[in-house]
Image (cartoon, rainbow, N blue to C red; front, top):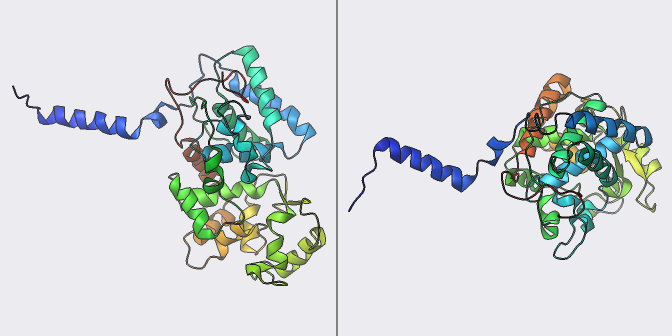
Length: 330
C-alpha cells in the first residue's frame, strides 16, 4: 500500500528533517533562560568579578580569552575547563592554551552559583556571562548574553592547535579558522578588538622586531618605527620572552576602540592584529576603518559577534550535563 503526502505535509517533513540534520540548538539559547531557575545569575557573577578585578586588573581580558578559546574547539561547551582525568586529556596542556588563565575565578563563580541555585547554571554559560560582564566593567557596552548551554563530558586536546587562531598564523590561516566555525570578516575584526585590553608576552611578537620573515635583523615594515624601538627596549632580543606588554599602549585596561586606531597608525602589537589593516585588498581594512572611526559601531558589532561566537555548536537539551565542578565531569 502506497502512502501519498500532500505538498504541505511534505514541506513540514522536509523542515523537520533539516532541523534534525543541522540542529536547532542555537534557537534554544535565550537571554532569559535562567529567569525562573536562577534569576540572580548575572548579579552573582558580577559580584565575584568586581572582587577579582581588585586583585587582578587583567582578569577581564583573561576571561574573555577563556571563552574565546573554549568556543573555537568543538563549540562553547566548557571543555577547556576540564583537568586531566581518566579518559580525558586536558586542553589546558596544549601550547595554544599555555598562557590562558582565569580558571580560579571561574571556580569561584561556580561555587557561588551552586550556593544559590545548585545544579542549574552550566560552566559554559558562566564563561559567556563572565565575558560580557568583563567587557562592561572595562567600559564597554553590554549585550544580551544567550544562555542555555550545557557542559561537555569530554575534551579535545588534539584539536586545540589546529582550531584556535595564533599570533603566529598567517592572515589567511586566521581567516580560515574563523570561517571554519561560521564566523565572517566582521566577526574576525570585531572579536580581535578584544585586544583593546590585556597583555601579550614578548615571545608572541619579537620575531617582528628581530627576524621578520626569518631574516635576522629584519623588522616588520608594517610596524611603526618609533613603536618598534619602544618594544625593543621592553623586549630585548635575548630576553626571556615572558615579559608582558600592553596590547593597547594608549588605554591598556579600558575597553574602547583604540585598538583600531592603533592599527591605523601601524601600532598593532601582534602581527595577526596588524594584518587586519595592512593586508592589501582585504575586506577587513574597511571594517578596521569603520570601527576606528566609530566606537559605537565597534561596540554594536562586538556584542553581536560575541553572540555569534557563543552560538558555535552549543550543547543543549539533554546533551552534555551541568557540571557541579567545572574542572571535572559529574
